[in-house]
Length: 292
Image (cartoon, rainbow, N blue to C red; front, top):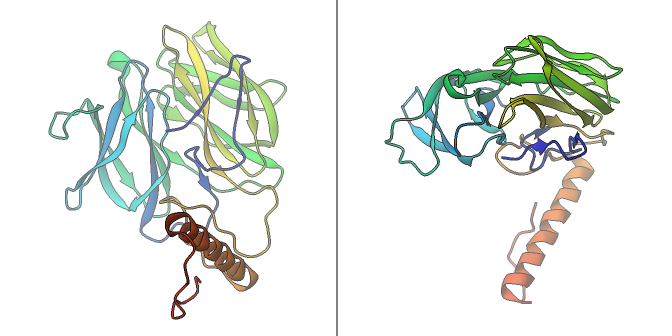
């Protein structure tokens, strides 16, 4: 559950790659019948939580994200398209305990979603945000606002000397994505009905990236900003097929030509390292087929 917090200087950066950030690297299209979903804990007065996912079809309940803390955004998880119930319980509570909150996710094939707990106290609720991971044009990035600050019924976020990221965005909503030039943008967020309630920072977005800016309730009062990387792409697209990284969020990769040979060499080298580290040098059986 990684995210980028505002540093003491007020600057927070978006990484160039998706590994460990909760974002997806651009890969092959999502297979038919599959959706990508992630969880976000954006409720400042809620404890660390265990997030459960229950499929309407079959009724199977799965511990989806354990011990998610405030501000945490999980990695995307591929699931079968369909209806789900998202449930949050205090971390460590048994799955039989009544959840703190539940809400419904209708996951459509080929789509991506963020299932978030937003707000504080009686304003706390579950929300589903539609994510668009389509890569932008080279040299540009795409950004949007998730307005999760209940202290600001509506909020405006602007890039200083740049575009308006969001105008009069209502609590518990997400804006569409705006395309901006890659680089660093100073930001200012204001509660529309209370201009004195504001915060500032700056966001650095890489070419080809897709980023969500999070406007949150600050513990103790006020507003705070954070970012999470939705998707990242190579600054320069290499020729041929490229693996998008391992793990459950990676798309299907089929290597061809030189890319396949390079992949075989890399996997073969990894196998040799593991043999040497685990068992010492030994003769490889002559009938063992090469890694492909």
